[in-house]
Image (cartoon, rainbow, N blue to C red; front, side):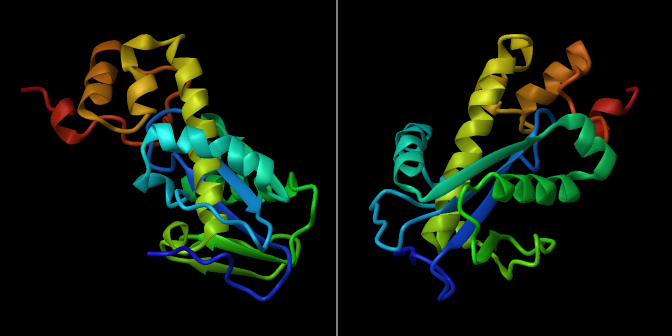
Length: 200
């Protein structure tokens, strides 16, 4: 499917998306991107459809060719305090606030958002596989978060965050059962499923 350049008729439309919402550890990270109207890239797609190598290849292209971009992490303590949905929206708001060009319109991947500075917006289910600016935001959110998880992996290598990026893999949960949790784990999440907690 060919991705569309933008959703609205406004000149400066920003796409925003987040990464890491379902993770057990690390931040939720959002990005916002305004692309030029003539932007074209045959590889750019929803970050989940691309290999890590392609995402990392696209990251500097998006940074260089976008009119403006912003990236925001919201960390574990705040996720535990305000919940993951509010943290995801706060991360998106934070990434939009970093844009050096104020957008006229915002399109958001998913179906949940809160108005930002009275700028009109539209939520779009699977927007990252429909619009280039949301796809670009999904790439930046994912690559910036992955790089952060690889960095904190050095501090706690037993959880293998450089590979699982904090997602609830069998390996990650087995490490939580064996070593307990770290300061990077989200304490409001169910870190171990029921079968790990049964005293058999």
